[in-house]
Amino acid sequence: MEQDLIYEQYRNLGLSAQVYTFGKKIEEKLKTRFEKIDQIAEYNQMKVIAAMQKCKVSAECLNQVTSGYGYDDIGRDTLEAVYAECFRGEAALVRPQITCGTHALALALMSNLRPGDELLSPVGKPYDTLEEVIGIRPSKGSLAEYGITYRQVDLIDGKEFDFEGIKNALNEKTKLVTIQRSKGYATRDTLSVAKIEQLISFIKSIKPDVICMVDNCYGEFVEEREPLEAGADMIVGSLIKNAGGGLAPIGGYIVGKKECIENAAYRLTAPGLGKEVGATLGLIQSFYQGLFQAPVVVAGALKGAIFAANIYEKLGFGVVPDSTESRHDIIQSVIFNDPKGVIAFCQGIQAAAPVDSYVTPEPWDMPGYDAQVIMAAGAFVQGSSIELSADGPMKPPYAVYFQGGLTWYHAKLGILMSLQKLTDVGLVSADKLI
Ligand SMILES: *Cc1c(COP(=O)(O)O)cnc(C)c1O
Image (cartoon, rainbow, N blue to C red; front, top):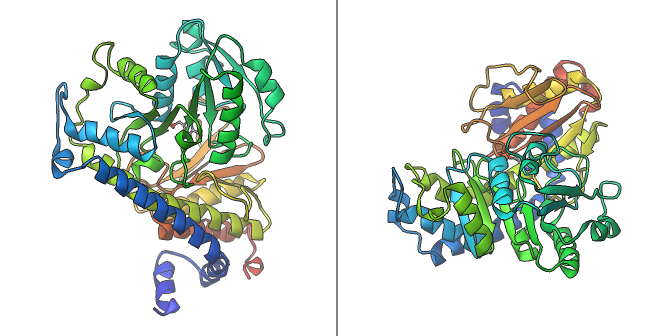
């Protein structure tokens, strides 16, 4: 098709010819990298289909609309078998009753730890919301309140494992080790599955019976292998991130050793009930279809992240990861050193959204944060961060974090629109767009 015709569409959406052409040049240089991403998506697509076939997913599974107790929900039970197969675990718990990623992680921890046990994070401070789960920041119902202690060993310079420190931290009380795959909003590297494997094998060589849990949020389907294939005992994630493929409207999962999953199920519902109850209320089809689409959705999000890194690095901004680094999650950050940059970026992402594109995001005092935060999201599922979304705290270094995009083309539009907004307010001068 004539490029001009494609540009027509972008122009209708508010993009200047200069921004469009600049983006096109950057995209052309990324062909080989995008091909690699497509190969991983292809590999993972086959993995998901094979799991669905092996578990004999049927029309009956998709049509299950259970209510009340939800006994004998074959849609739910088969989906859990599919997750176990796909992520290479013995069992899985995949439920709409798991409300978000933090809940899934809290559930996995609280159900597998007992009073007197110790939890270790060998990769530094975990995701913000886990601070209250663990009791690093005191909270009602935290692990600390139940007499579960916590230790942490930081990465050396945000990169390398502190093997000596980890060895010293492991003790007779250490029951569970939590390893966060994605850096989240921290300033360390995201861990590849190969690095997770190295870490787990070191830990198990010292304490073979310790449970190794991986917070898999934002990591699913980014690589060919998942952490259970690298020695982890349990992986945990959210269905409104990668694994839900943008279709699951709620939910979380835990996959891993049978005993870990049983513990989690008895905690989610009640001792004695476990996995036997839990109606799926007509949501189950979206869980299946979301998982089916997830490898391709993740590939689109990854392309968007790489595209943005290349655009903003070229224009002289700091980007993490940088334009050439290998990717282990879908998060990209751009450092503007200027609050106006964060605001313009987020307004561009919002302006590109299929939903709520006409609203203008502004910084606000969000509960739990020490600075104002601006967020852009025009998503089909509220708060979904596998959909194109961005946020940034209004404090130095004025960085924006963004992720997602259900299709590569939408991610591309969002990033180009962010650049348009930065150009409009004069933070990027037009003569740089060559
Ligand atoms: C998003 C995320 C969580 C928490 O998930 P929510 O659904 O926001 O509660 C935990 N860990 C990591 C690494 C995440 O990215």
